[in-house]
Length: 295
Ligand SMILES: [Fe+2]
Ligand SMILES: [Fe+2]
Image (cartoon, rainbow, N blue to C red):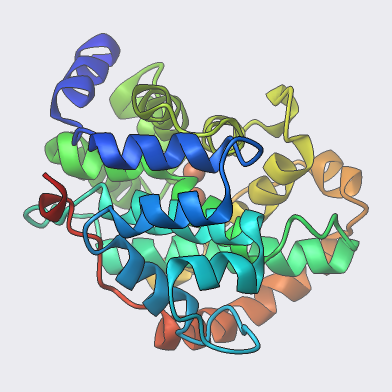
């Protein structure tokens, strides 16, 4: 099963347009490019600039004023933050909507991804984390962390449907259902495969590959550990959305304590999360970049 599924994903995964590839390369090489050059690459990617500005100006990021162009956005919030927003929009657009998959609710799953970003941000604030782990970066990690599930939704919808049907029927966590259906693959290993095919940045690849096994991460350890905890909190929220009030995900307490956090901190974040997600859903645009404009 596992090799066949990886082959299917390799074949069916949308191709990264060359202009987007050039942009992603430039975003990872800030010393080689001026802000004007990177902004010009954004402006050359179809409707990407408009979607980035809509996202940035939506109110979700609480900027002090509205950005008027990609270059203005880089100057307003800084290179690293703007990089995160651009990456988030690009990743969201790489999976155009296909037919609906039975047993898998995309809107609830989007809430899980936003919930993971927001829970991670609340955790980072509580622990006084490095200021680089801000809302911009954690939002991109939240959108990206389950890219393996999004890839299955796009490339192998029947397999994804079987996983979610199994989880529902047996009342077990999705990770356990993946083991039953996929054998030695998980959405993390599939996501790692996708990141390598698309040559995504190393920090995103680490979050995708290790957010369920944070002790295995050799780099970006703090970000991976925060996403691990944020993801579990958001999973518990997601299961409640699905009506599974008794299903709770286990959390390794040593990862929590390695972040200087307690169970009470995690519980407080979980209690505050539903309202934060509801607020965020009012801000965020559902428009996606149209890569067909880029040929
Ligand atoms: Fe995950
Ligand atoms: Fe997740």
